[in-house]
Length: 112
Length: 113
Image (cartoon, rainbow over all chains, first blue to last red; front, side, top):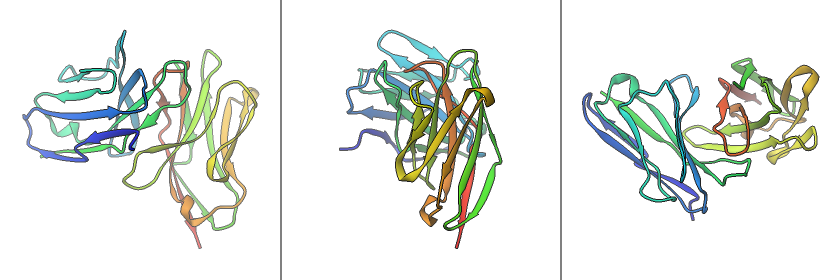
């Protein structure tokens, strides 16, 4: 009965590849997020998304794109991976009007 | 834009001692403030949140935090540290409910026997 799940948990890939990370929530939430945690453990918002609006952090390269097939899923697609993309990526979700975000377990991406 | 500053990237306390993790915020509107904990190789778990109700907020695992507008602070405390409290702690702020969180840089808590 995992609330927010991510797959894969670990992803190792070569520079230049394209990869996707999947996120699913079974909480009935309507807003989802992607955060990036770098090697110094600093967490930064990448995207906020609900049915109506996608908010993109302006510092995120356009190689990153969120894709939402339905309200319960927000996948992260990354083109032309670079060494600097190595990080832990966290998905989170909430219900609009709520104050609490629920986080997934994270996906550790390593680009070689 | 809202931001938080966590003072001290590493804090070490003895088991049974008081835990005090500092967080100051900057916000042009009444903020929503949060403390999250991250255990090694795990996701983030909400400890407590301030949403303009009571200024003293009690959370899980014996933690609490006090919102002080005059000091723009939201420090996290626990009267007696346990070994299991060793983790990374993040203070975060958002402009409104449902908005993305802006995190501090985190404080790593070490608890020694």
